[in-house]
Amino acid sequence: MKLKIVITLIAALTFVNLKLLAQIEINAKEIKQHITILASDSLEGRKPGTKGDKSAANYIVNDFKNNKLKLLFNNGSQFFNLVTDVKLGENNKLSINDEDIELGKGFIPFSFSGNATLKTSVCFVGYGFDVKTDSVIWDDYKNIDVSGKWIMMLRADPELDNFNSVFLPFSSERSKIVLAKDKGAKGIIFVSGKQFEEKDKLVQLSYDKTVKGAGIPVINITRETANKMLGDKTIESLESELNKSRKPNSFDLPVEITATTDIVQQIVISNNVVAILEGNDKILKEEYVVIGAHYDHLGYGGPNSGSRMPDTNAIHYGADDNASGVAAVLELAEKFASLKNNKRSIIFIAFGAEEMGLIGSKYFIDNTPVDKSKIVAMFNFDMLGRLSKKEPFLFVGGTGTALEIDSILNIYNENLPFEIKKSPDGYGPSDHANFYANNIPVIYFNTGVHSDYHTPKDVVDKINFEGEKQAVDYIFNIVNDVVNSDNKLIFKKSGSKTASRHGRRLKVTLGIIPDVAAGDVNGLKVIGTKKGKPAELGGMKSNDIIIAINGNPVTNIYDYMFRLSKLKAGETVIVEVKRRDEIKVLLIQL
Image (tube, rainbow, N blue to C red; front, side, top):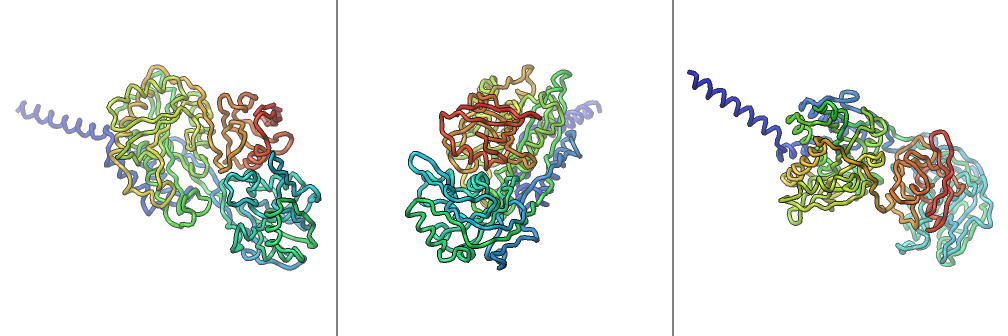
């Protein structure tokens, strides 16, 4: 009888241990389940503020609950507002000498137009340039007074086929607007020349992911509308003449324009999903390791959504970007919760609105549930699902952001089924950048960008589930080491040159991380400076707000880019910043 009882107990304990072991193991089938649900048709691409976005957040909350993590904020949800789109208001009007022009056929406001009514005369100012370089001097404003007026100008530049054109830094609408405002213009009319836009289409109204508007009314008109103002001239002839002569041809028009612009921002609510697994060490439990990945994606795509197929209206599933990263967070949460041996506390986060400009992680780091200085490391996963079967590698970024990271990686780098590719840079186009800007060591993992990135082709069927399991097994070892080490990582700055996220290459750089998502700041907020770069050497600090460069106002990222485009390496510039309630003047050598 006793023998039967012992056998029964052994069998029961074995069953329990096997069940616990199954819980503890990173599981490829569970990874597949997470990704399949998050990248399903029903979630419709998880665009921030949509039903699919909310469903994804609820799924993550429930998984955290199932693993008995402590939910933070509002039952795990840290809510924030964001702008996701713009729409036409009810009061958009344009009349030329009292002749009404039809909205959507003859004119349309730009999405970043300021809302205003302006009735005044009009000047034509060519391409709206004031360019002074070694090879070109072209000033469309030299012999004309545009103060207080509408100005009409051509879009783009006269060298459309030259990708190295000297005009590139000056050809964007935003750059031209900044210059026009400096010259005193009160409203701007853009028109497309025939060589630039043969079919004479109006621009599409679409949100460019920057909350700050132009501050003055900005509209686009057709050539047909423009020609009504030009008398015996036409846009076609003016474009041809400017492109051939490369000389200004600015003049006053014999008309008066009255226009009202009315753009309405669509503000939605999204959220981060945040939970904590408290540590077991009496002292180290007061320190925190953050493990995160963003769960949002591009919805149905479209212009300015970030889609690489912007003309395709289809679900962008985001299986790799970034359902795969979320799956890694959920698997690690389950494993650590099952082991229950973590010395430090672990905060697990699924960030919202990363694709809109790292908004969720920025909101979190500005509103942390714990003392920010107690966060000792941040691990970020963005695209872990496409480990190559031919040449497998795992990219590890941020390895230079703490003295100990390389040595920790080396402990676990032997006999791996993939190559480790490292980058010391703490900056990057994902959520870890906001932590690095706050002097927190970061380690960022992905398995590489592919041709399906930001297209509807990023689907579940193309995920290498076993490959992701192998990657997460390796990642667990690194995280576990940091979580349970008696010594914490020592932060150090590690930055490298990065291309402008706005697509223009500049001759100079200050070396900052700008906060492009800040809508309530009159200026450009700096969320980080790069080690050894001009901004840091000149005394600029995190959270400074740049308000002027060489006396010229900076109200947003576009003003900033335009001001930089006018500068040369070696120059010393005067940068005014607002630091708390004080104005500081910095001398910065480029």
